[in-house]
Length: 55
Image (tube, rainbow, N blue to C red; front, top):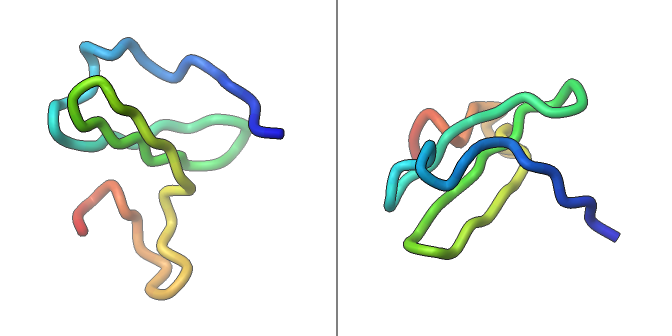
């Protein structure tokens, strides 16, 4: 089961947009679209690049 943690305030995230955070030794990309928030690993498994630096 997924664990919920607070990485930032909602007002810290651009809307729409994304930001990167460190948690538990990993980079996490957090995406905001209005009131909807998603989080994934920040590293693209295909290109080994940071997703938060552009799509």
